Length: 200
Image (tube, rainbow, N blue to C red):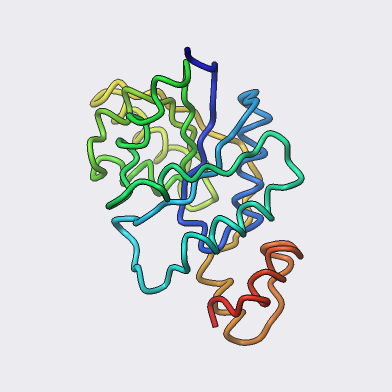
């Protein structure tokens, strides 16, 4: 039996930061999502594996970051599945559990999705919520949206959210320079990173 509507925010979360949380909060508010799964990727195909800390550490940081939000829930589906992480496989795995799936992506993914594994299946089995963090003009985004609607009959809406210019690379660089990252990840995640000597 399907369980209504769900949102999914996937990513490496290496580490999760306040920019991710603001995006999830904006999607929750605008699209009335009762639950959003925060889903760390297992073995992301397009990322340099040498820079990624263990799945256990990434999941622990996600749990710390989302503990004050009752509508956010850690999902280990992609961590638990063997092999490379593909969004199409995740949607196939949980598709029967929900009436509708909203999949939250960044604007860069809107342009990359045609190169993803089974993009037509992805577009047929979820409603894409795209966040523009200031890197693209709205006209450019609308052109890409129209292309995906035409090519795959995709369902796409844009999330209105404040742009928070935080990157995982910047976080790791600050740590190497022994600088505080509390303003980027929050106090609990920063303490976890320091306690476990991550990214140093």
